[in-house]
Length: 221
Image 1: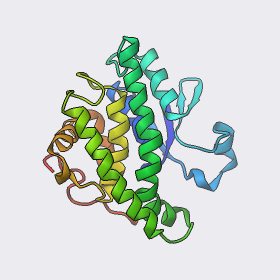
Image 2 (image 1 turned 90 degrees about the horizontal axis):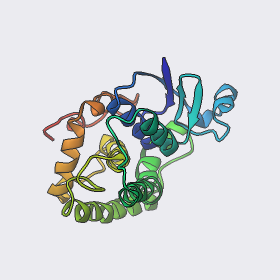
Image 3 (image 1 turned 90 degrees about the vertical axis):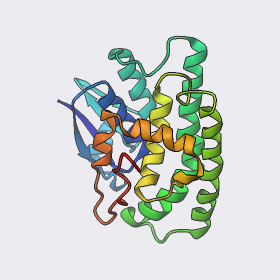
């Protein structure tokens, strides 16, 4: 069986989980406390990062590379469009969320509120939390501007860009750090993606010491 070494509240791992589930690929989930730098794990991932996917006889790393590999080897349903301009837009937005959004929002909110405690690296830095809370408002406004013109973030079809964005927002929603009342357009988009069968395993995640809010798994949030 395919095996994914992951951490449940990693948006990069969640992006891969969504891709696997959307393509109906069975996978065994193995929690990896990657920050402990277990030698066996480092043999699979010299970079010391999750996710790592054992896919048949191959060991795959780096979340976007994994997702694109899966999209090429299991082309139905497609998560990358065929045309070069459309593919560029998907890749641009995936990078936006995995780089800019992650740096400005995810690491400052999830990183300070949860990762520090789990990894034992000290107490939350309130200035980072405040910066993340400010930045997420700007990012939600940007998403709203995209969704005002498109059915999904990168166009009229669901793509990897939607999974990248939903992966980050879902970990923040787990700790109630998304103000869904700020944008009905973004909330409706998230409700659509949250209702997909591929999302079910994410909604079932339970992190010891960090119970999710009641609305987290509610499809009618």
